[in-house]
Length: 327
Image 1 (tube, rainbow, N blue to C red):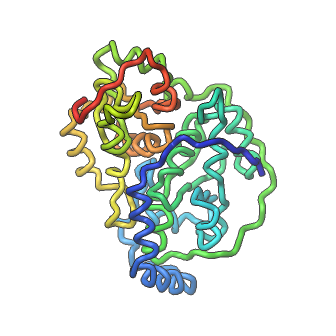
Image 2 (image 1 turned 135 degrees about the vertical axis):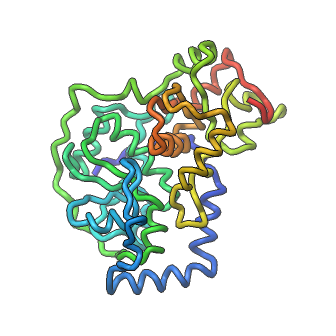
């Protein structure tokens, strides 16, 4: 198994994590534990209504994923300690850090050659039917989703709501660790979508001038606004603010918010043209990847993730930043 390490600069938003901690360690913990115990003895079929069995090409419902479980490899990107406490039976654990390859002091994607090697190490090949998830509102899973889309992986979905929704639906979880898979062959594809799905600093500079490309800042409101007391804070001029956690419904098993609600919120920001060029960023493309998967599921077709994000942009003193709540 690869042992890739880096100094993550994502500064992951604390609000959703705090909500998850509150969920797992409050009075709801007992209810969750009882659900786990019940689910270990039988699968729940009561939720398998036609409305619940959904797959929009990006997110797959727990109900649908459970029906297809025998033909699916589940990948769990939760913290390893959480994975050991409970995970979907036979799900393989994958470290988020393996998705990152430090370059010039920045936490960046390692590229298609690197990711092909990582995937092969954990027994994945281009034809593996994957359902990926975590216990952070699919924050980590969305980054892997982006990497797999660059590789044109044949069949990948994100489990809507991840571990939390799976347990609340009453499906089986286990502490039993799966057998370590044999290495697979994952050849680097002759053609890939890196350029179509990735933005760099040059793209941001161009976006500041072209008047058409929309920038979305997915960090917290405080980070977006910035402070005059903090050197190089604030947001990229013209960027709209859409905090990544808005994509997640904490009252509904951390599944994605309903599409009408998301589209209505985006409309208030002037985001309605699904063909408009969009670039999402945060500090290290971690949180922004969750918004990319959201936009993909909503039918937006021209979305890029700024891999360097503010960890790169913010240290370049020649580039402008704006303070305040307005773009």
